[in-house]
Length: 184
Ligand SMILES: [Zn+2]
Image 1: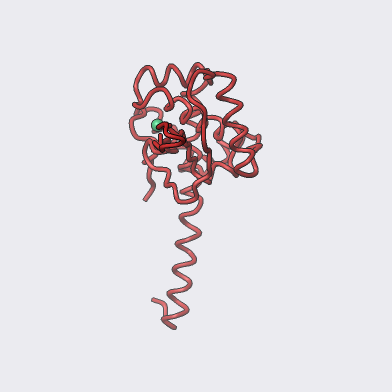
Image 2: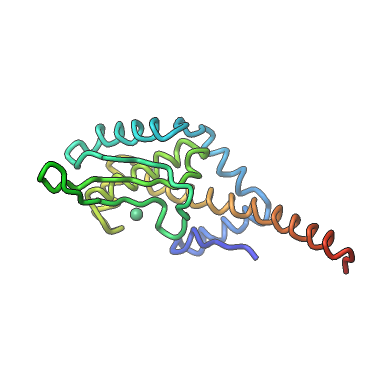
C-alpha cells in the first residue's frame, strides 16, 4: 500500500497528481529532473560553514550558531525535518544559550535545493518557534520559492520511501523461502 504521509495537508487535486506520477512509476524521475544539482556539502565542517553563510546573508541579527550537525538517527516524519535547540550552559559565570541545528543525514546525499530548504527552515526557527505566518514569511525572505521547494522535498522523501519498499520486500520473501526450504 502506498503512503502519502509526507504530503498530508496538501489539496486533494495536488495529491491526485502525485498519485498519478506514483502509479506511472515516474515520481523519482520527476523530482530529479527539477532538482538535478547535488548537495555541495560533504561533511559537517562544510555543513556548518554552509548554514552560517546563509545566516550571515539573511539573518545577521539572530544569535550565533554553536553547532550544526548531520543526525543519522533523525527520522523525517511530519514536520520534524530537522531540529533546533537552545541548550543553556553556564560559561564563565554567564548563562549562554547555545544554538544547535541538527539536520537529518539523508540531506547530505540529496539535491542541493533540499539541503538549502531544510537549512532555511531550521534557521527560521531561530526566530520563530511555531510553523505560523511569521515563520513562513521568514522562510520566504531567505528563499522566495520556499513553499514550492518544501513541497518538492516532500515528493522526494515519498519517492525515496517508495523506492526502498519493493526491493526490501523482495529480499524478505527470498530469505523466507530459503530458510523454509519450501515455498507455497
Ligand atoms: Zn519546523
